[in-house]
Length: 445
Ligand code: AMP
Image 1: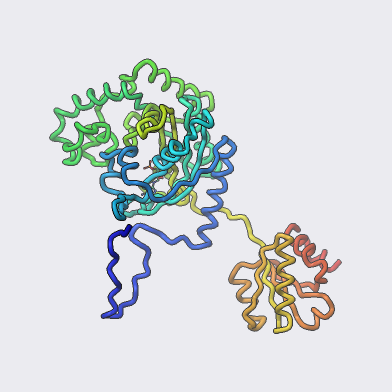
Image 2: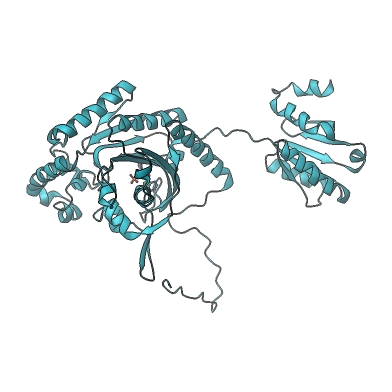
């Protein structure tokens, strides 16, 4: 099957190729990736303590999956998907993780194997939004999904887990907002009530809301347009219209959050942008660091109807997604664990192969080791080691090698000592673990 034919590159006028990343997408250089890894590692550690296991799904899915789950009238599906045609297939880059996980859950009949499944994912998502700080076209989310548990205890634990995770990372000024949208019956009641409320105010709404409010009145509540916000301010509360079962679920959630000591605020405007939510919705935001106006760090909620709606068995479900770019903006400077690595500097041709075998043995001892094989001067090898942030430089000279020793330079402490090859690994380990100022006397002793 062929996709759209890609036009050939024109060589008529030789112009340098544009090397900027695609609009709204970012290169992340290795130094910055280390900050990502710290956050991802902490996230994994936290969610795995709660029994979540990682799932990996494709980046591309049938467009229809998002239309049927995220919802055709949502902004994400209406305007923001990167969609491509390939032969008869219409495919979209995933704008969020929940639909893909739900599809996998059904397709793999996971429900038949275990009554409750807890999954997490970390990966890129794609939405053609107007880029600004904290809002990109390719961004990364870390999220969790729970299938088969109707809550509300599990809803509260999830919210508390996230509050704990963000607090422990050191993010201040956290605000946890919770709301309930009820199940389908409460929602239908609320829909009617909201339409009744909005109809006489239709002229005050934004043109987009005017067009859409009868189809999806809840969207008016989370519209960013000032006109819609003003109209929504006096809207009836869904909490007052919940069925007794939905109300009990809501009260159960608040009671469990109180028991856990999670600080929260009830926000009755919190409907979230996606169509599928039922009962619990929540969001955590912060105004700290460089996060700016896009201050929602994560959002989530229950989607008890999605699995059945996509053709699976009726399965209650809840999930959330956290934006990693925003999290890193909020975090600011993150203390990275120091990396002690060793640069090997062979002084001449004859010392280069011995350097390779020495590197092999140091790596077996767990030291990050690089051999400078460029055949340059010691000065230049030292410059490279310093620029790369090496803690040690091991200088391998001809006469020393003949005696079975090397010169060990501690670049951090500006010290140098001669060390036998046979004990180099132990000496490096001692230096790495020794507190500052203690090595000099040790080295002499
Ligand atoms: P959503 O999937 O829209 O519920 O968003 C969940 C979280 O993902 C948000 O709170 C943000 O932290 C993050 N997020 C959503 N859209 C973007 C975007 N375009 N750029 C960066 N982060 C985003």
